[in-house]
Length: 141
Image (tube, rainbow, N blue to C red; front, side, top):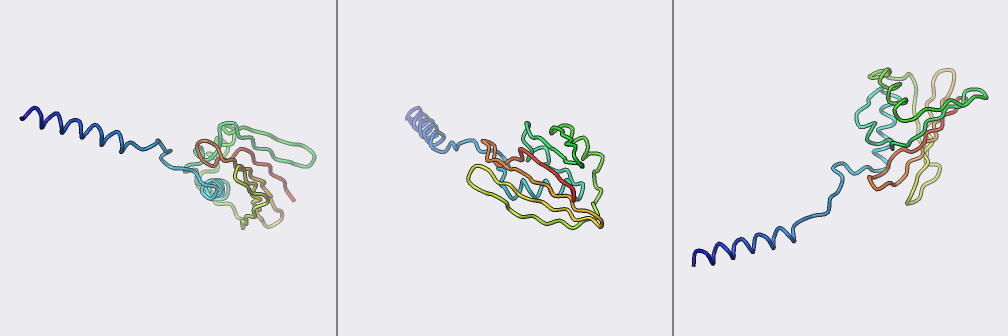
């Protein structure tokens, strides 16, 4: 009888564990809002928490300076931002969604300084790991 109870309990436990198993979901699923807010914190406030998480490994950063385009990858941008850590930019920031659908979103981020404005066009894509920044194109006015 004791063996039958143990066997029944073990079988019930195995069945329960089989039904309860959930699909693996990333610990911090990335939303569009989280991706853009993390980017804003990094470039305007020098707060780098989760920056690497919201930027795709193949992301490209381009800056149009006059007639010259300067480009860098995620690693180079992260290194640059480390040098700006905890430095708050003297600008006002605004965002505007330029285009949005289920697969990608383009957000215009204007950073207005005293004598110029830096406009960043941030592309966010819906990847298997959540919404990630895939491209940033910056122009100065």
